Image 1 (cartoon, rainbow, N blue to C red):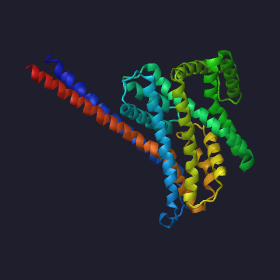
Image 2: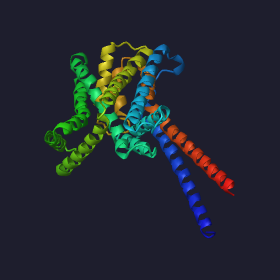
Image 3: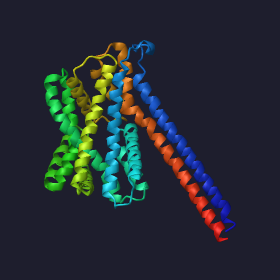
Image 4: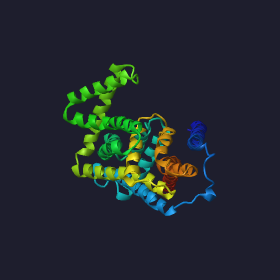
Length: 373
């Protein structure tokens, strides 16, 4: 035993050093993402007005902030509700469910913003839910997936009437065309999941058509393997979603929360625009904001960086040239920067709590050993 102790001590030191290095890399990477994105999006400041000269109707930023806060609270509530209702009674207290819920949401949003095409959010959420050790494996996958599907379905419900109106209201046919294409991508997973629940043959046909279309425009190279992969993923999504959908009450509440969540975040650009002295009809701004969210959905850049700014210029171009920069900066704070700033903070909090728990556990064991002696 005496010979093993130094080796064990060295292993612990190596693990500790590795953890410190990984933490430094993680924080450095997050800071790098923020700096690189900011430089990319806002490097052209020649036409930006001096901040001291900007006349801001700041009170309009209050409803913008409230819309964001209520939206993100609904997302936290949605996860807490699914955790409480899908696990055995007494597994989580309401406070614990909220704690797991808000952390899972912020971690997911963080990875959505730093990974191409927002592919990292759900895997990160699944890992975080599994770390609780209290949620069955199937549910750790089902909860993020159902949250995504509910968000997509309610987005489509809001978007379709908006886009029909936008065809007559919005001057840019290119934007509306790309918005409709984006909506097809939005609709793909919900249609496949619902279709699988009723008819696997219908789902297989739609997948074949969709993959053939992607192959025709040279996005997909191997049709056979792509079809097989999509069919497997759809089957997994459908089986997981059924776990949550067993409770109609939970399903209905999650859908309602997703609906208002989509609605509220789409209101933010209007209030930001008015705060900087813009003049735009409410419905026109709402339709434009929905169209842009849809148009950039399938863009494979982290957080739709670059493209989102280019397309949202359609909304903010109503401002005088010098104010566009500052309005875009405020809007990106709500839609992007807040998540890549808070994400690492969440991990830091979790790391501190883990160390505290380990320290308390060690003290408890030492106290038991002293008592036994």
